[in-house]
Length: 442
Image 1 (cartoon, rainbow, N blue to C red):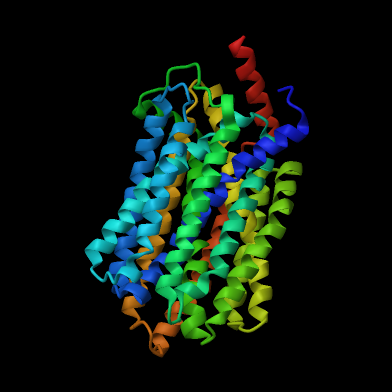
Image 2: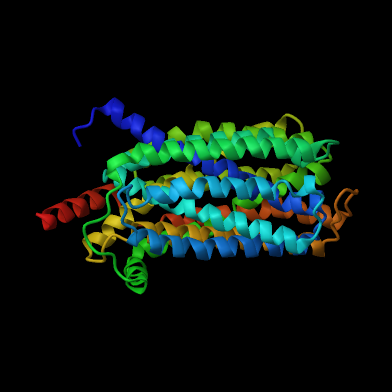
């Protein structure tokens, strides 16, 4: 508590750097995996969507297992840090293996599915404990919003790396070899930043003094909270709709606009927009309420998606639209992860223990399940529309790609904005709850 401000902020930044490592792998898989399977490996779109669903579904279930195990872990190295130190190199190795499939000439869908499941499963081992560690750094609600902003800056940096590397996933002669070298460097960077994050937390990674509730008890305590339930719903909707834009834009730029270079332009502009938006949403979530800021960020992103649907902008115009979308997207995940630790204290104040890892595991489970359902629907829509990789697409396929890129995410984003306003846990109420917890502990 008496730590100098500069040292404290440096610690927060070092912890947040782990988001670069996680997101360089997560963004690559989230944005490019479906395209890689259909256009580089040759898996049918519906089968690729199913593989995406199975992989993320397995990951989501393992999130709960890791969350349950982490709550019970007690080591001299801490409670959550050992998972980062062990999980980071294993996950990075699986990531490199997955994106080596085009270079290895693999076309068997079963082998692709195995590689996807392996990567997704190992990702959970590092992801859940890293997310839970934010509850150990501080109990200050506004400081958590600041930390979430730092995390999003590092996540956006990783997304920028992926957007600049997007040509490797599109047309090009030596893309398989170049792709392998890129993921090798990215995986190495992921390990380094996650180790830095683990070391930054230091002695703060002390287990809670109370014995964790059984799994059923933790789930019951979480679901008994109205704000936890609302946050879960917001997370599902946020995972289902906005991610479709970037995922489908690879197809949109290639086959609807006929301008593959717009993929890199738009995705890069989106990341720059996120970097612009993050400090604004962090500030807005601090001076007002996090739910209000989250609702507004969804509205901004959804309006940008709608512009893409209405005008199908190409060239330099797509950069402006992508920048606007990015400003909105900069607040979505940052604010959700800033709200989650406050809910932990709400549950603790109500006598439900501190289900730190389990709440994050449940939220990530919900988000990944929603993202995987979105990918499955996208694959089915592509198949049903007559899409075939590498050719001029029929009108039905182009319309389907445009709708899944822009119309569906925009409508879903407006639904997200309305839903976010139903979250009620304010800064003032959280402060009252933390004071109650401190008083009860004396």
